[in-house]
Amino acid sequence: MSEMISAFEESPIARDVRDGLAGANKHLPPWLFYDTLGSALYEKITELPEYYPTRTERSIFETQADAIVAAVGGASADALHVAELGAGTATKSQILLRAVARRQERASFLAIDVSASALAAAAARFERDEPRISFRSLVAHHEHAFDAIRRLGQRQLVLFIGSSIGNYDDDDARRLLRGVARSLLPGGALLLGTDLRKSPSVLVRAYDDAQGVTAEFNLNVLRRINRELEGHFQLDRFRHVALWNEAKSRVEMHLESLADQVVRIDLLGMHVTLRRGERIHTESSVKYDEARVDSLLGASGFVRERSFFDDERRFALHLARVVKR
Image (cartoon, rainbow, N blue to C red; front, side):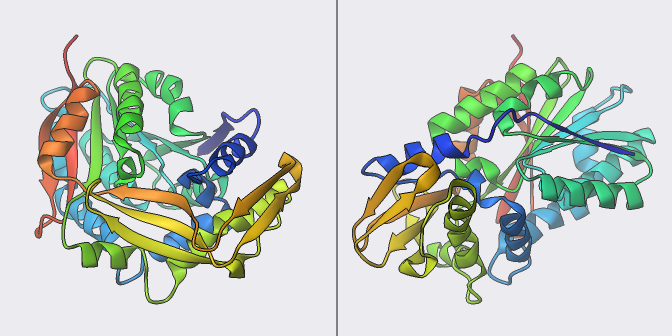
């Protein structure tokens, strides 16, 4: 049995596009990638040979799910209620939820994402394959899900995996994790997934694959603006750029204008002026070491209790608890 509810009263796309494209340093938020086409493209990206994060994180769940659940539960006999921020199609969390169900016979799961199509796909799969897991979904941005998490029950486990925290700059990451901390009741925990620092050449290839799937994914933000806001972006006048920013320890994705151009967005009543070579920043993906993870968690009200790594220590899942108040 599955249930889907919505936390959107109106789409925030107009506000975010106007704010992002009006200034000198143009940017668009990465949540805009995830319409129906963007979600499908992302699923394709996760299967590319260059894109190691998804299969590496999945390997941690496949080999250590029972150990993670045991570490979360400790000696408590109370049922664990699981929520995931940015769940998408929830294929990795499904592995963990099976371990929860082995420990307590049944499991409840709240999947939270901006993509209704991804959540619908997850709901259909869980209903078909996971009779011991009660599945609910919430179409919402992360910050709109805290009340729902708080209502889950006395022992919550919030998953924020896939290195999604890396899409945020440090201030926004701390703000988000503080919201998670406030939503957790005593006994609750966070499982945070982070990609780890490694060779920049490996990192950049993961965001600039040979087949061009990531380029299509990046360009999809312009396609979405055209469709939903009556924009007039010509996609062949932009190119996908992925680069390593050493100072900020992150891979960045940009859309670079191939010509001087002025683009109308009719429903916003605005004209976007772009010079040849000017870039629109669409996504960052921070790569962490353990010290930076501890700093981020500590500034957000958490303490890291234990970390789980793949064999090559390319990726990590960090179990954290709220510092006792």
